[in-house]
Length: 306
Image (cartoon, rainbow, N blue to C red):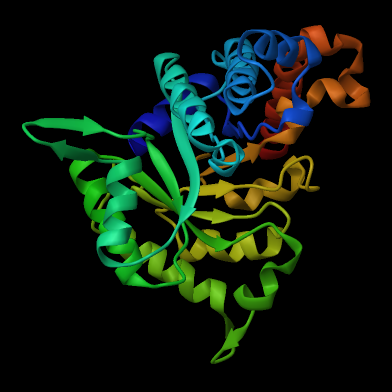
């Protein structure tokens, strides 16, 4: 799957991923009113509104981006109906030819970790039948429990030719409370980066590993270091746009081949119509605003990369 992600990036010349992280407050009123008219002000009504909102955005941008990243918590908050909307979103995006990165941030050990990996990336046997659960192409994984938590995901990645992005240096302000702690004079995130590179050696694609890393756009100097620590790992870069990251900050996240990183924007794209720069589109044309914001992001990053 890492090879397909790279092919999609080359085809679109857009090293970006759009985070499909919907909240009800983001969704234009005409969409929620329609969903509530059919299903009531219920969890099902909310989930239907979320899916229709996602669908409109995806229809507007699928031809200019390589991938999307739905954040599972935004769907889980609506219970079973929300998870149905999550699955419908994953399937719809894949039907459009997009690579889907499930932002699930799971991290456990043993059979629990294996079950997470099977549920999101692999296949489960039911009697004589085999089914794919959520069937994302990549997922995000928390490495806090060490190799015991990562190996089940790597094993499924081998079987399914899929991938993971491991949290290494996250974009949030308090990430340094643990990630920057010095161990023998070096920050913890460097040790985690070294492990990512090691885990990735056994699952290589054509030049890049199935095992990537999450490194926030808000910490460009750390990103520069980690690019060297993990030369064969793709870096998923959150924190662009709404969290303050800009294209000029991200040059060193890429390798000399122009690859090696994919930059995420969530609110900056899916809520573009609420921003002053795109307010002219209005709520009825929210998806057109998202397309323009996506084009502007691509241009910003590509200009910075030269």
